Image (cartoon, rainbow, N blue to C red):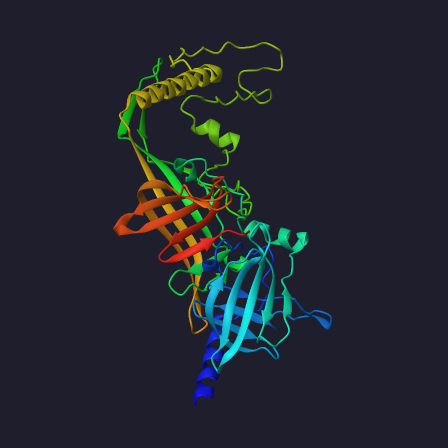
Length: 422
């Protein structure tokens, strides 16, 4: 029964730490032993000094660390080991282990760190009388890193000079840490997870009516102007560009109208009249004779008609009216009383996965009322030194973390911490 419980515990732990890809040397930094909790290492190379060296398949050997246990998967070393303590020697961290099936069996897991706090290798010793086995993490190539660069924000890439400078910025996190269980997960590039600090300036005004009379005898032109709500968003460009839209010039477009044929425009114009040409009759006319003598026809008295304005004159008057309308409209807009409203929000896009294997893509927006910055005076160079707290509606709180150089390291909300890529 005891062995069955251990088998079930191993199966559950490996499900929690399920990993199908290598964990790379540059995936994240580990500034303290607490950063190890919830992380799973998937090495690529296994080496027993002076004996053998082997390239591993992704997931063939894994090390998952929780607050109390180390879960190891791999031929000859698989099992659940209790963590008695975590020391911090000069080379990194050392986990002192105990086999729960044999308390007298003591082992260790050494975590070798670089100066930049990256994990270079793991050295596992199953028992005090067993040899040490070295597991090396792979280093991502420049080509592979470039392929996913647009999906993640890198460590040191995004600087925030002041709390107000965050508005309009976008963060694309790489890792997620559950603060309660400390389990760490890598975001899938295809999910396009992002945090957008959005700023809007809303300009509101009232409707005004402008009446302009032309200088000529043309009818009065009335122009109604609505000072609509104008939204100026301060935001970064999206990761993917929108497709180009071809403009349509067909007659059914609400923005374009095809000009009428010339004959229709002339006949229906209130400004132009096209008198029909006089028909000449040179044969069979009672007013002409073959002898060349011309009989006088009594001329009808002219009928008085209204003078017809020339096209150039009308066009000029119309232009003057339009110019006057624009001038008065601009003057009214300057003198109009407007209300400027500033709106701030944090917009999140992420995919939430459930235990049954299903997932949901969320797009959420949280209005922000105020924000403030705190500083850790004891932070070392490169560590998290600044914390900006954002107060939202309904007691919602968000945090943004910055290094001593004021570059973004993480975003925190609802008991989750999202880290940028190291």
